[in-house]
Length: 351
Image (cartoon, rainbow, N blue to C red; front, side, top):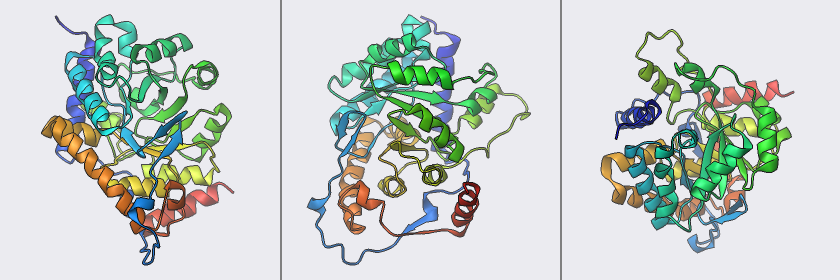
């Protein structure tokens, strides 16, 4: 049975994303995790068994401070991928988000590619995913589709503007306010890889979602992916647009954000998780890196990678004298000159 143009687009996104990670051709925008150095805690006065990695968020207790982030769904190929990701999540006790479900609200053939996540992980924490312009009816349908425990409402102006068939109107705030008030599960507002500045956090404060996923640059860059899909001259090139995950987390601090943060964007090691928690994230998530691991090496290798992170995290907490995520935020660190310059400019912009 032939698939729709939107289903083919999902497969194109998948292929281009994996190739960018596989070839290590991700663009670097702004400060990265390497711009932060941890200072030694020579006398931590604790044991690895003292570490509590648990996180209370979204009306749920997460055993681990990271999860498998939204990637895909909507086609035969992506159905298989979602099934494998859900199995990996189930075997490692991780939460998982599915990709945008908008296609499944239009095409009944696409529904199974999302439902498989719940079928393969019946008791796990699953996060639904829709764009910020969707109605509360669509939100309820997306949640019901996978019996979701929470939903990400993604904001993706940059991606839409690069996409040949993308949206050109972005009036989202009133709708998001309605969604947050009426959703049967907690709502996360999520960027898709271009980060958030001080102003975004101030605006989101009025909406009061359950969490904010900063979705910083240096992970999967949808501006690059959509330009490659367009196969047209680079008349609209915003490859260097946005703020990195590190810069977005710092921007949340400058704006006195009090809403729990999730860090996504270029996370590919336990060390990146630690640095994100240090900068104020409650949870972290990885999409492109985990997807590339699965596609290149298989489900067993992805599970091994996740378990490696799970073994490393308590030791890294101990290395920094931190018994939990909150105490990790007090760990001393050094910023590179470039990152310190960003801090100086953005802090002065808030006064």
